[in-house]
Length: 294
Image 1 (cartoon, one colour):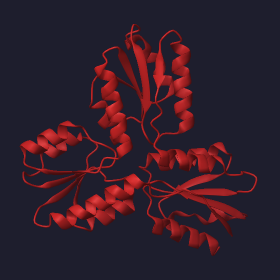
Image 2: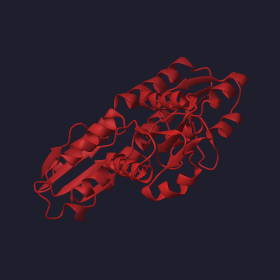
Image 3: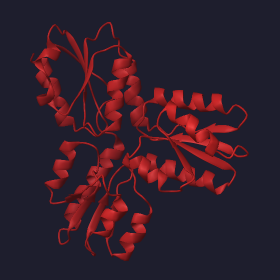
């Protein structure tokens, strides 16, 4: 079988940094309990690797991370995920003498800083395009109750009456969304508020954008199937599947080679393989080798 290895794919620099810092913490604080608050990155293979170092995962979607931290022991170590965290976590950690290892991606930090800058101006409304309950979205919304969350075009209309129409508007977004969905939402907002000054800062990270563009550049006449290697919790992985489907290429997400179904490969000559930004290279290579042997 002919296998096209889509480039770029897999780890971004932010994920590499997060994993390194978690491993460094495991070595540096061997005399302390070390907790991972939420998933370091959204990939089950990476999370298992971190747990195997003796780091204890703390994750409960029914509780916010501030409440989870409140129940952790004093004088321990807590690793914060790459997706960003509520800033109040650091205040609480200091009160409990907890050492924080913050692996927040620099792109998320930049979005936080941008929103704070515009909130300080007092004459801007902030609209954030993000996925509901995603840890990055939760981190952004924790900055201020004045931030308006929009997830889909359908959610634009309900927020219109909530806006102060004497103010300007800043629109920004989660770093791992679909660039096409973002453009659609921004255009719809501008069409509904034609008289207001609107500034849009697209905060898709480079890794997300480059991987999406690489899939969109695939020739659907030459490719019979696209496999995206990544975790079901990984938003950037799921968006790569959507990009393949937009190209009318049958596209599936898999955790690893064990998820590949025989019927997908029937009458297939050429398959393209890409991977989410938190997918280890060895997992990708196993998939590619398996396909090449078919």
